[in-house]
Length: 88
Image (cartoon, rainbow, N blue to C red; front, side):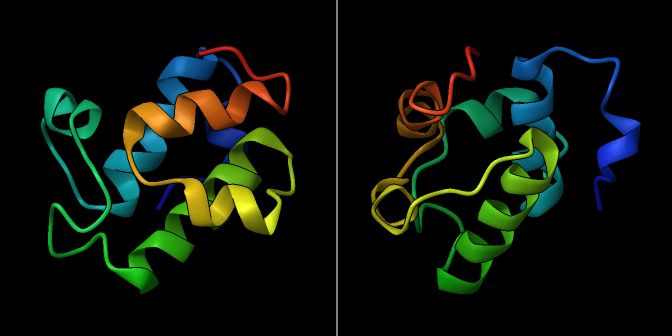
């Protein structure tokens, strides 16, 4: 599991990708970028909430409920994080 203090020196984009890779036990970075909700077994409702918690910890934010619901893909997440002034 990713620890917030370990990600301080990497870019926001790298943090974002690392959250996906850790949450869904991925080894291929390209696979992370193409993910959509329920496209893999681990991205179910429980995996989704785990990813949301990782992102909140890594970026020091609190996601709105609507944003958690709308977070349906890697690409959509980039859009959502812009609302929190996080540029990836």
